[in-house]
Image (cartoon, rainbow, N blue to C red; front, side, top):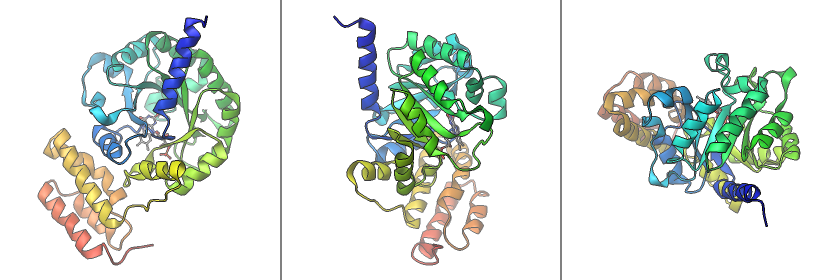
Length: 337
Ligand SMILES: Cc1cc2nc3c(=O)[nH]c(=O)nc-3n(C[C@H](O)[C@H](O)[C@H](O)COP(=O)(O)O)c2cc1C
């Protein structure tokens, strides 16, 4: 008879296979992949794996039902990402998140100073024993799959990603997303997809490659160089929430869908603004959406002047009429190729 523990392990592996079957996931981005953006990405792609923004386990322990955990019925498959360094605390948060999540992810890659100072995020790569302890503790308490997201290492001299990945697997992680940069690189330089192939050769659990996948072409090249099971897309979704769907269609069906036109992008920012104001209230939603203008209002002459004007407006009607003017004046002419 099969040992119940290994049967449970097989069941979780099957579950992971289903969750990642589209071979594309939305990488977690604090302040970006909120309820609204996740909903929009989902409307394009019914099957990609969504991931929330990083949720601090310290914060979630204090306040439970915040906007950050909100989900819609159709968000599944969705992974909720936790950050922190206290195994029991993270595990308790993971147990709580099971009512929303299909999978829980632990952040082991955030490079930001205030996060790594507290031994959270990428700092865990310098403390694999603690990272293993976190994975073991969480794993012992939840019934859904557990994943980890990490980088190549802390610095170029400390590229421990292969051994680290093995340790995470040994501790019970069911799935890995790896951002092919070191912590020291932050977001600079170029993601080194070829390195991921070495991790793939040395672990049995599925691995998604992450970093600089911004188009169908880069997704294809990344998969080829990394031999990963799929790609996680972060910044590429800014200005183009259809990107995950377009990558899925290409890698799974060979169908090449075009990138959005200027008119699509202007309609996209209007949609985002509408939904953010519904979600957050009028003024907060307008201010929150300002950071997205550079990604939607670009690629035509005079774009920066429009962006400069848009960030001064806090009236939705005025913002919409300026955006409509862009479509009228620029959608078929003056495009910068
Ligand atoms: C604004 C921003 C916020 C991010 N927040 C998170 C986060 O909360 N958790 C995480 O694991 N990674 C976070 N990341 C890293 C991304 O998930 C991803 O690893 C990185 O951007 C590289 O992928 P990309 O080139 O596709 O963007 C963030 C990145 C950006 C740009």
